[in-house]
Length: 225
Ligand SMILES: N[C@@H](CCC(=O)N[C@@H](CS)C(=O)NCC(=O)O)C(=O)O
Image (cartoon, rainbow, N blue to C red; front, side, top):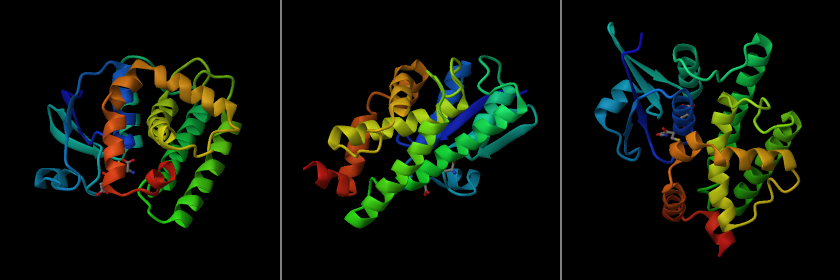
């Protein structure tokens, strides 16, 4: 039914990257348009009710629909596109996976501010909140290599970009979030190898994220110094 898909995006955004991973896993062609979030174009503000990326513009014979909210976009891709199934067939399992996708978004809620804060106390409380959330992830993981064992799915697409964010932090300093979480570490390593993840996140990502941290004079950089 969809005639073309256009993803409005930003290179550093992990919400965008989960949608890109879903599209790549399905092998769906799409156009990616990066915008400057510090200077949002008017055409984008008209499309995006919250002024946030990603937005997936779906063009059909009937016209254009702009979808927002990354998890909704991922679900739309799963429901409408051929290719590998990214959700379990069982309704209860599928609901459980959707809950963990939301949990991934909650982790990003704690992450925002950790990378840009200049206040050590805020930094420490966010670090602890993240450590607590990842210990819940550890308890939820099975034998691996992916969230639902052998099959890569949307929960993996949500967490892979989150782990790539932490990879950059880990090059700077030891945050101690993953040290006692062997299943999380194994999952993180496995996801980093996935071709869809590598192409969604991009080889220039660490460099761009480091430049972002410098621009914000992040506390993280002071820990690393
Ligand atoms: N709940 C949204 C969050 C998206 C989001 O926060 N995107 C950030 C970039 S990573 C954004 O567009 N920020 C611009 C702004 O808030 O002005 C989703 O899942 O799509």
